[in-house]
Amino acid sequence: MPDVSPDILRIRSRLLAWYDDHARSLPWRAAVGAARTEPYRVWLSEVMLQQTTTPHATPYFHAFTQRWPTVSDLAAAPDAEVMAAWAGLGYYARARNLLACARAVAGDHGGVFPDTEAGLLALPGVGAYTAAAVAAIAFDRAANVVDGNVERVMARLFAVETPVPQARPELRRLAGLFVTDHRPGDWAQALMDLGATVCRPRSPLCGQCPVAEDCAGRAGGSPERYPIKTKKADRPQRRGFAWVLFDGQGRVAVETRPDKGLLGGMLGLPTSDWTTGDPSAAPPVAADWREAGTVDHVFTHFGLTLTVRTATGGAPDGRRWMEIEAARAALPTVFAKALDRGVS
Image (cartoon, rainbow, N blue to C red; front, side, top):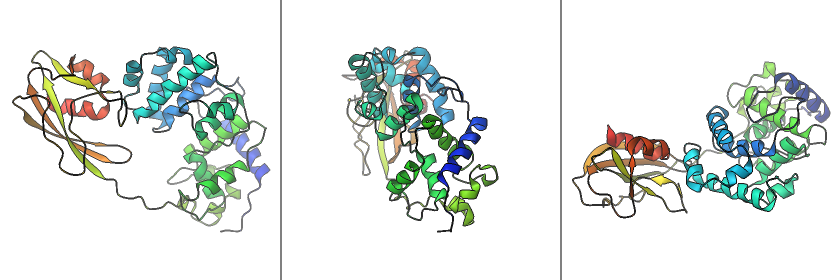
């Protein structure tokens, strides 16, 4: 490790001054010096950002807050409407947890979020990171907020040689050295902004970094080397069939998936099991099924190839007809792809 000992107070002072001048303008963030952001907006944005990027999450955030302006509004929303609005934001378990948390806040806390990290952590679906982020950003509590951006900044500042994920406890400990009661919300957001805009995963902009002279990774000549990562295992590939059944009047057969499991509670097309072996090819009804090609989709832990088959006939038991355009808008991305393949 290079002989560089970061000065905690100097880094805090320089990074907060940089943040005052360079803070990103985000729809869920209060301007520097303004009143703190409403906790509902902080919580909602943090849940959305757990599996996607800021540009992708932004239109969803606007749509949710326009449709459900308060946590109590969201709590009162029908499950199906929230699930449909969530489509494209990642695992639907997060949407189910979102509703569970909103209903707990509305029902058990009078629509007011707890203002401590411990109180937030007790809410359903709220993990350590989200509790810390909401506590710091919405309530200015001295919480240690550590996301991927913060891990990268710490790994470079201290030239941490242990690879991720094994290094995460150490990176969290190092980040905790900087947490004080002085502007904890701004500090958390300053670290995130530094990682997102300057201390980038590739090609870090060290010449623009306010704490470059304290960075052990930069002193060693290869800041982009950090954080060191363990080689990922190959993502398994699964296969299955998607059955796109039309009624001849501009409608397609859809179903509601079981509450448990991937895409639980979401609208879907009839499908076979998704397996690494040979999937079952039994269609939902007897019809003149024709192959329409394949679609590929990548989930976090596996890739999926669906063979799409189409037919015209009667709706199978447990399914219902839906206008094609309405179905396309409501279906999760993987099924929308299959529907498009079946229509083309």
